[in-house]
Image (cartoon, rainbow, N blue to C red; front, side, top):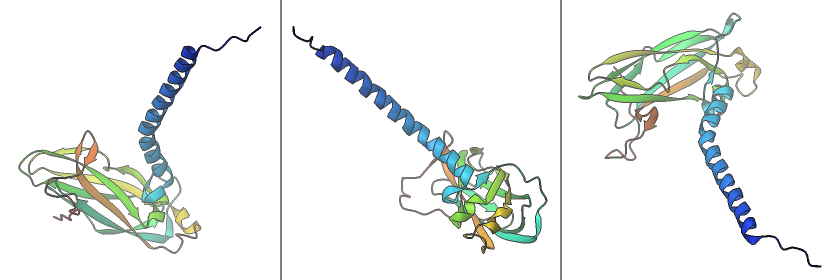
Amino acid sequence: MTKPHSDPIRGAKRTAIACAGLAVGMVGLAFASVPLYDAFCKATGYDGTPRQGPALASAARTDDSMVVHFDTNVAPGLPWKFAPEANTVEAKLGETKTVFFRVQNTGAKPSTGVATFNVQPGLMGSYFVKIACFCFNEQTLQPGETLDVPVVFYVDPAVREDSNTAHLSEMTLSYTYFASKNGQPVTASVATTGASGTKRDF
């Protein structure tokens, strides 16, 4: 008595279905990886990304502070001016601070931009906490239009409990405005390839 042979066509179909399922899963993972990575960075401060969170309920540590510098840039291809109301502020640890930035469309046509940000030194990203920020909010400005946008933040007092950051007394929050489409930064590639961002102060 011989054993029945398995149907090769049925086996091929199963293999094809398994491969298709794997491909769909990989595509889904690729699309999910960007927002997941972004959420991870915002939650942990990884790679100089400021944390997001509510204001501290406890009072600020009045015996210690951090000097926060603000660096503003505009990428090639976006005819905007961009500058903070103050280049530097001194923030007591745990104290909620609000700083305004001014953006202006100096071009002859409406244009849309979005700001990205980073904290330096990168280790400070875990302790710079944004309560509210204009970053990643797409803005469309008419020719000559000026807009004042805020960032509300505090420096977590836990910065002094980390041996890697306990000695730091200064940090820099850097913003760059890019031309944007559908909420995503678009880098200029025509006639500006390789050009660096430019400071445009008022």
